[in-house]
Length: 505
Image (cartoon, rainbow, N blue to C red):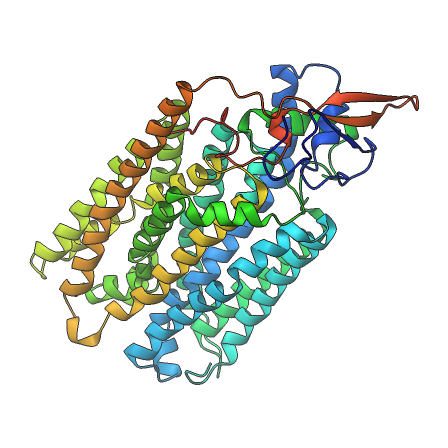
């Protein structure tokens, strides 16, 4: 039988492609299908690990560096708040809050077009787009130093190169760069406070230094970052085939450059899309603390120098909690929701401490604020989880975009909680944050329940052979042609179309 709405009504579909051609000839075949079909030998665990290590060495450092750079860039506003930017540019509290909102509104406007471009553009153009984005970001950051007034893939890439279990760890590795960024930013802020230059203030130096680092990163991405395992420059043709074969267990394929409207609609009607989006929006309301954290610590009674160094502790806590969280989730089968829920508990305790402790107990208040950084692990796990339970390239792009749009909405609206009238205790914003910390783990458990129920339903269904008779014609190295069956994993099926798909929990 043929895939619904995709192939003709014949019992067998033969797609003629050359094994050496980079893009499959039929829109229903994953671009990696011909590579996988050309690999005759079985992929041994040892060879799979060797290829994975080669991928790790070439793309994981770049992903970590970029995530470190972008988060450090994003936190420069919070660091600059205690380095003098509000006074130098005459910012009111409301205008300062708008700066954080404008960042995420821009993120919101460009999110889906950028994700769509990653799908539809040729591979080399994607990397050009990636590098240009980083370069423009770096230029914009440097220009912040001139301000005098208020005026104004990683998820897709990870799913292409890594298995489900590996995705949980790798997403955690590059996300813990947030903590690294906070530590380095703290030391940079401390250092810039000691720079004494006429007509150029410490916060301006911070913008210039981080902007230059971003520009260097853009150059590295231009020359070194691969678009997918099908064309990774550091892999041989045989290793590319093995890289594709090793992620076959994901049942999500690698990529497909054709936009499929039926997958787009499926993403919009899939309940888990909106549950993950709601989680993303609510979990990032507390993320407004990024630009408020140092202001709050300073209000506890610490000096500017003390505040910049104490910010390093936030980074250390984030590194430890994310690392331990993703290790637990990777080692304990089907534990993502449970681990994420447990890591939210210290956040709730932290909010209670900040609201209930006497204002004179600045050490206790500081520890309360540090505790609110533990729950970041839940968001990290949700990112890798969403990618693991979504198949079909257009659907994955759409779902990732929706989740990141929700991320932007949460971040864009949250800064306006921090009104002058609520200072110094900020009971209202902290209460809102506490409510989010209660709802978010509940959402993780609801998602887990729904996915587990769907798995049981599929286990009870008869075997699905609808997509078993799909073939491609490959050209072997000696010039002979032969037909090889395309595994279901390379047909760009969604997780709903493929009844053999099982959701990780």
